[in-house]
Amino acid sequence: MVNITHKSKTHRTAIARAIVRVSSADTIEAIRQRRVPKGDVLEASRIAGLFGVKRTSDMIPDCHPLPVEYTQISHQIHELDIEILVEVQTLYRTGVEVEAMHGASVAALTMYDMLKPIDKGIEILSIKLLEKKGGKSQYKDKLNQPVRAAVIVCSDSIAAGAKEDRAGLAIREKLQGYQQVSVEDFSVVPDEVDAIQSKVLALYEQQFDLIILTGGTGLSPRDVTPEAIRPLLDREIPGIGETARSYGQEHMPYSMLSRSLGGLKGNTLILALPGSTRGAQESMDALFPYLLHIFRVMEFARHD
Image 1 (tube, one colour):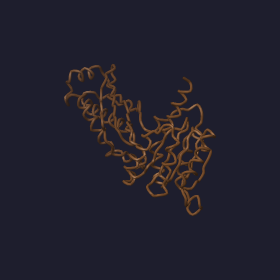
Image 2 (image 1 turned 45 degrees about the vertical axis):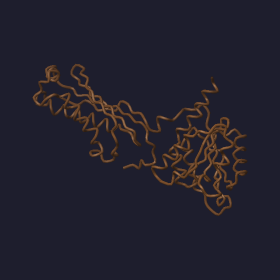
Image 3 (image 1 turned 60 degrees about the vertical axis):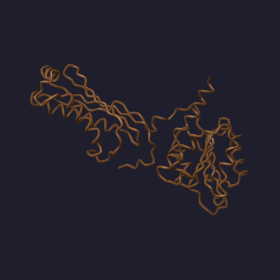
Image 4 (image 1 turned 90 degrees about the horizontal axis):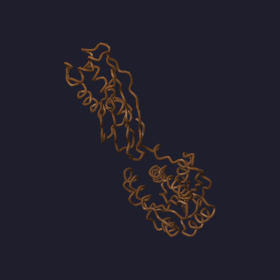
């Protein structure tokens, strides 16, 4: 199966449709009057569809087992066609479109099985995904202007050339995956408050939109990035650090010790993220593309 451990849990919805066509109005009337020998066709189809949704990962090899939080199955009769609608919702890392389609297919096959003794012309016309919501694709804002981004690595050893940077490169690679973001500066500074602040203020004066620092968010005596950044912010955004730690905590218990933070200086978003490669990657997965919504909000504000 595809690795989804890096994804964030979001509210995901899918709606699928199956259409069963019978060959005569007599079959439709038998369904309505519940006179089909095998029983109540619509209710049996509904129950079978519920089982189909729940058992999707047992039948489709690459589907992940996931918590199904809500399922609704309904039937509508249109002349000789019976429309089956299946809606599935979850709070998880992957979507439920296959679950919805599998539920619709099982519901349709159940109808076929129950009706074939009285209607030899019954057929399943289609099984189709009508709608899906959730995941990162839903939270990609369209921006009128590209986001000018800079990455700053805060590390004594890397600044001295004694150690190779990986976290900063990982952050830059993540940012380059977003067409709306242009990484225009990449630098390394030592773990010194003055050096960190000087670099951030220089980028701010150059009107960078996004400044991401990596390193110096731990608890060693030389970890001073939060102390350097916090005084520069006009408004801290507590949810940024909270989200990064909460996401990281699901993967690594030590994430609780990180002092990641973020906020705005003017219209510039400044983030201080962990210096470990894994911590930096996980923080980026937790925060992006959702943080780009800030720039959409600021665009609206400028036009008001």
